[in-house]
Length: 270
Image (tube, rainbow, N blue to C red):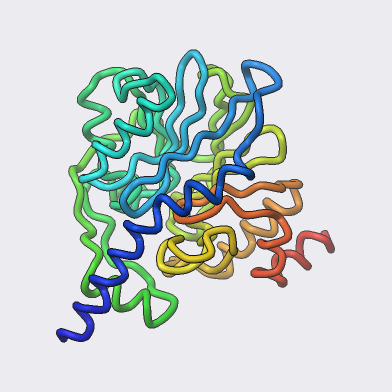
């Protein structure tokens, strides 16, 4: 038992220490200057365990909000872009796991931001608990057993997506699309410029992105692996070149194709 606890403490430390390295490595792949107001830059905000993404428009959009203890890091990340949490107009949650939705209730209490969630993950939000995960390897089993708290403050989404949500009312040329697989209600945000924020459909690197964050791979937990790979094939078929991830990343299309050859072959054959 002590061996497991020591190993998980090391994992957590690497995740935390890796955050600065991730930010330094993702900068070249972050979107360049926006061509027009409806094509915003994607700003990565590295939190304790996961990433959040800011689409900076006149009505700012935040994609994911991290865990319950991530508010100080999120405040600093927004401050670097001249914003406060109270300025966010829309929060899109890629899925209902605690490390991505832990601050959703806090944003609702601020009174401005509308909270968006895929229909299949609404039960998690209302329960304040993401329930049992489906680990894909030994590391995942250890994390699930000793390091992951599935609980968070319950909240009610303002916008429940059953198919897709047009983001143009918030100044973004793009849409949030339901792609069940990682969870029953996983969402992907498709943007112009062949960009997509995909949450945990793909994992960047190892130890939550602390090592080789721009190397695409299978996430530790997947509710439905075949369906998730179908989603990856679908995204590749749609021409996505840059994938922004919930942990690590961003990753290129080539890295995704190398990690998921069946999905890549499926995308090219259809």
